[in-house]
Image (cartoon, rainbow, N blue to C red; front, side):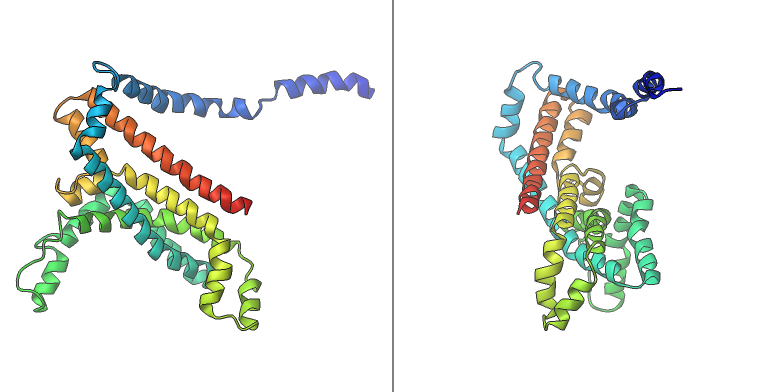
Length: 284
């Protein structure tokens, strides 16, 4: 059989073979049905019965802008503490022996294998007025009365950092694992201090992982609901809690839709800004 004779058959088989778009089509349809259509419905509700009035109420009312600012503040604090804790942990995982790395990953991944609700209730047991922390402090004689740890901003931040920490560690570890171990050895051989090695080798080469972890933790923290609702006890309101309150208590779907669109727009803007920073770093 000649090559010319086999070419049409090969062409037909290649035409029948599904391409990348065809392979992703079921996932795209599923995302459209489960995510895009409800999102578009919520977007249309935000303009029903008042045009831009719902957005004006959300953006000009001092209460909602203050809650939005508090949401960004708490998300920023959670991201900062996650980075401060996550980078040393990721560094230890990347530089330790395989046995200790496996043990460390087991502790890092354990929170991901446990329900967020279970972890939040565990913090409630720890931070309650009759919880473990207060009982230890009182029994040891350090305190006479229990501390009000629960239903506070501190409790919300602790719980959120606990949940978000693996999402910071994993991208940074991935960046650290790709660094050639001979680079810090050569730097030490040339007389560089540990601080200089960190500043000139590790931080620049892991900046991509840092930005990825910061983006993931910050964006997810903006829409966090379960942990702030339980550990804050309604005293530490975040934007997602306000949206849920508008739907559950007031049945104000239009206003809740406007608040949801505002939160989504601000989240996408922050995501874009962080990605622009990463893109500029990659170009440099």
